[in-house]
Image 1 (cartoon, helix red, strand yellow):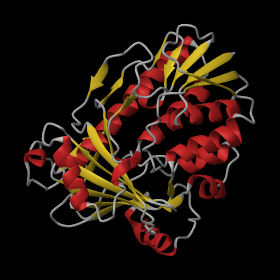
Image 2 (cartoon, one colour; image 1 turned 45 degrees about the vertical axis):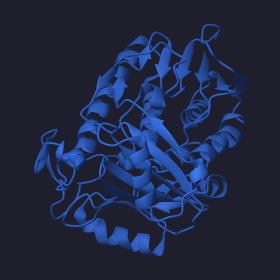
Image 3 (spheres, one colour; image 1 turned 120 degrees about the horizontal axis):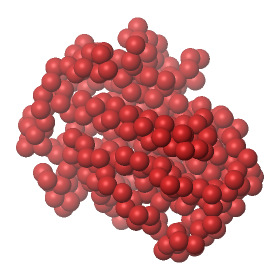
Image 4 (cartoon, one colour; image 1 turned 180 degrees about the vertical axis):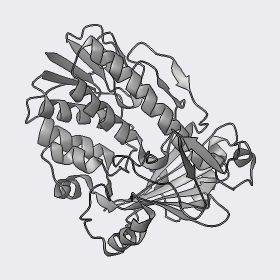
Length: 373
């Protein structure tokens, strides 16, 4: 079967690498010569290790080729008036001390789904291309690609991200309101084995330490702050000297498509929807789609299951992310006052208390979604 992947970013090469490893399809990837990659996703979840090893790669490949560092937890700063809280990669609260010890010593955990990675997303795409996809026989075409009309394939996988190369599909709207991000790196080198988010006036800032730099940005809602004011707030609050010449603004509409698989076209990654960067679930969503696609195979029945499961997981993720805002006790701006407040939320018949004695009940299958018993 002939598969054509459109898009040469992280999702495109993740798709090419995974399908060329797990299937015997004839795969071609078309990448644009004039559309830059988003390349922001630098933080992964614990299941990413499974993805890499299934491709025949190792942690050392990530260290050597993607400037990777280990990640053990997510530190949320100033989201709550009672102080910071850590979203550890643990299954029970009794494992928190153990997780902290591994993080303090930068040790490789001997238990599954207890660590993830910070990576350079653009370098990840290059590594997957050169070490997996091309050796597996994937053909690559570089084109200006202003139309998909002439693509000859049994299935086309749309990894073109936010670009409108394909017929535009309506998005399922969400209650999440962040729709822009100021992104800027710093040449600072610092050992920080966790992702940090810091609540600001109209959203939150992230800082992620790679081997050779700090990745950082400010996620916000433009109903409450302008790009210019957001840039100034970001610069004032970022603890690192930013490379201002590389600062850019990324915008999106939070939501997801209801039928990522329609006809013979399958939307994967950002083209299937994007909620926001919180909790590093963007690359994971691509991984989830690819694993599901391989398990189901290519058929009409698979299409129905694929679409149904995509909507289910996006609804679940939306509730999970929204809970960070509605359970926060921060109410010092119009932005933070815009959220309904809750003490707890009902999650598939399981109650999750946030910002109490402990944070989330943590991982489901290593994906850092609330654990459903």
